[in-house]
Image (cartoon, rainbow, N blue to C red; front, side):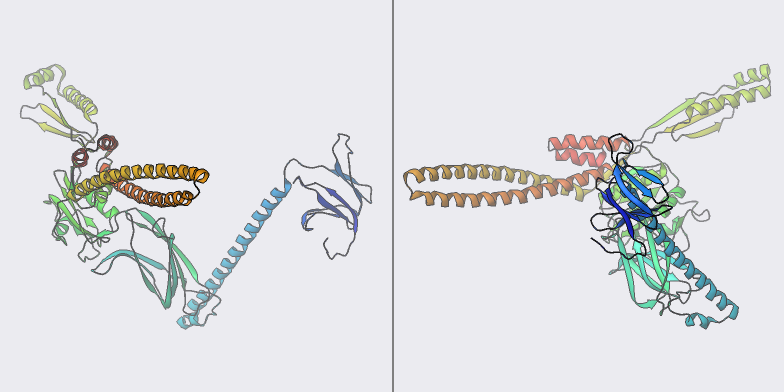
Length: 578
């Protein structure tokens, strides 16, 4: 069956399932006392063990007297061992253990090789520092892969705006004479193959990689760079991670320096194109300082925007004019001190994403309507105060007023209240609490989207009428085929000359039927595309509201679609209600 080279000889052999794998293995006993468990098909050793003396015999017998065969091994010194078939497949456990062991050994080899490279790198760097010779690094053997110990990989992410080049630029560079051979960039759903590889044809210490994202999502970009010298065979791999902001594809079209800019300076930057008539407007009660923080965290601007006390004390608005690196169209974010906020953009999906990002940053729960309530606490008159002062004393009166104010404040603070204490001339106090629920107005105006919805509904009606007509033609074709088939069968019995005629007519009708099926398939695909676009628009429109109002808008859209009420759909998008 197979051949092996060994200094000892086989003394016993038997067939038994000692591994519990539902198949018998060959049990081989050797003069040296070794026992091998081999595969009966190819002779591979599956398991082995060692006894104290050479094996005299191996047999299968019911030595326990329970009706089950056991494996009995006898050695020359009189030792008898018995083995039974296990209930667990030991072969699978053995394979898993071998795989884990091989994996650990492979990792060990990689770590030892990496450790050797680090030791060589430290050794040559110490020699360079001791001899103070910069030319020593060039004389290092190519297979060593040594680079200076102070080598650092520098990553820069910026935007470039030009008539022919509108991208996100990722700059990878080193801080010394080392070169970059290749760069690997991994990001989830950013590339078609999930990984971008930039391989340089010539050695350079700096590489610029242009990117364009398809969707507005915050992503972590994992960068691996191979760094070495032009003659190196082995390279050091630097791994870094950078975060790409959610709205990185929108930037200021003007060239700015890296220093932070004030709100007044940003307001003075003109838009690249005139603003359109598409916008969404709502109100938020937030300071411009926090708005600047949100902008800096979610946009990739040439410089940050900061609320500077020296120049922005009189600033009543923040007007940020941006441009899309995908379409080249304007996007304007306009914030007022009184809470009025307006986003100018033709993309209703972008408007919804901007609102969702902003309200998530500001912890706003619902947004559709504005509710303001006032609570007026009547003040005590001066006579009552004087009487209380005479009875209890000035100190007790102050403590009572403090407790009273704390109780009122504890009852009034809810949501986002604005509390104002006014000290009147007669010594009385008045508490005015404005309760601001997390409900904000939102009004949308997207004429292009409204026209597109009307066109899609009109197209759907035409496609539905076409589908009805095609279905009726298909039914007629099926009935004609049945009629031709019956006539052909009748002609086969009575007049054989007309059989071919009816079969030809049936084939022609069948061709018409196939054509109608193809037309209906194309019509169905167009219906699905139109419905998909309508659902996409309605989903983007629901993101213009927040919380329970967004969920209620979806149900309102469904009610309007059941009756094909286009005007109601447009009104829901515009005002959030029918």
